Length: 167
Image (cartoon, rainbow, N blue to C red; front, side, top):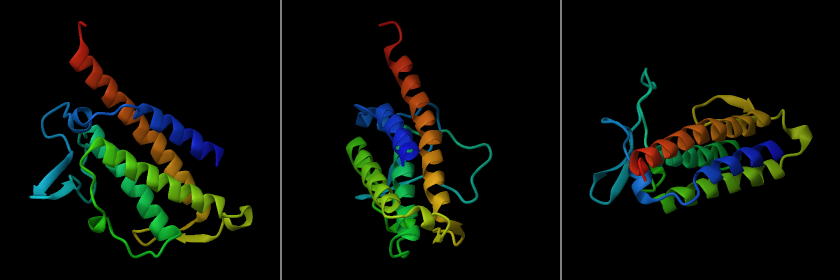
């Protein structure tokens, strides 16, 4: 639990005081982001399989991706195993993205607290059909926080230096 909490705390610190302007800022043309695809319905860019090279993304895309993945890992490993990505509401503000992230982490943290050491090798579902040991669910989400937290940190630094150079 300590490692998961530390990775999350580092990620959350990188999101402190995130604004909607930063949430949507596109560092280059063709950046993957959160967008309204029809009036009142928000979605995000994605492709299966992942494009190579990977596209540049916004902080908002990274944040929503993290939150949605946490919810889905919880849903399939410890929940009803019915929810799909298209059924999730895609947040379109910094505050909404942070709320989703916090809720997803809260759910996974409760899952880990309720898992005894002897249950960590037990089988758990993933939303793409694989069966993993329980420990791998938490390891994957910890690694995911570290990876995307680094990307978010870099994007926020780039935003700062792009918008505040020479001040």
